[in-house]
Length: 112
Length: 112
Image 1 (cartoon, each protein chain N blue to C red):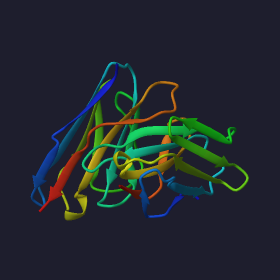
Image 2 (spheres, chains in turn green, cyan):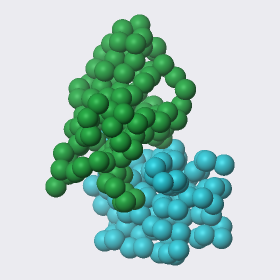
Image 3 (cartoon, rainbow over the protein chains, first blue to last red):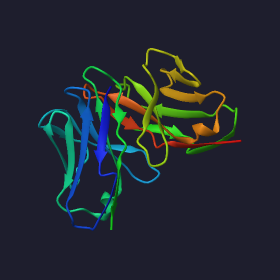
Image 4 (cartoon, rainbow over the protein chains, first blue to last red):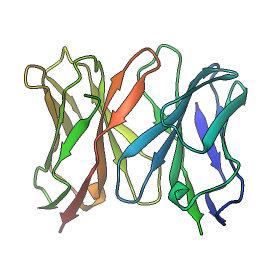
């Protein structure tokens, strides 16, 4: 069966510090991968998606970036965090040819 | 045109009641409509989904009704239980990359 992991689970970072969040998927090959952000009490906003290694599409211009160094690894990064980057970051995957997206447990990021 | 509008924002029902959550969309390119259930601090879990060529889909106590001409769809929870208390999100998929556009969520509370 497929599983998706995210770490860290929680993170508190000062403004201006760098960020690296990691997502890995097990039990599937060549998945589509997605990064979403959820602000408190709000819906989910798609940030980035990837259809393959090294292929990243950005949905929202911002100071975040994403990379996919391996087939089942997706990384969300920032060089300098802003207060507005606080939120709940969710990674999701979709199997090739499938419609369903499955979410990971999320990372709660607080920028102070 | 990419929006999915969800209502109500919050809902309180008694145990055994049938909460109904509604969503509306404009973009006729959407071709798949999932619902997600999210508990506090957790990632959203796929609950049930429907294609636009189907008017109703039932899985257990959860039913989606879909009105293609009105561009509306809704989630019904039969015989609701306190364990159903969660936030529910509708979403709509578009494109070969399966990008999801989410509603703003409905916080459901089922009381005893």
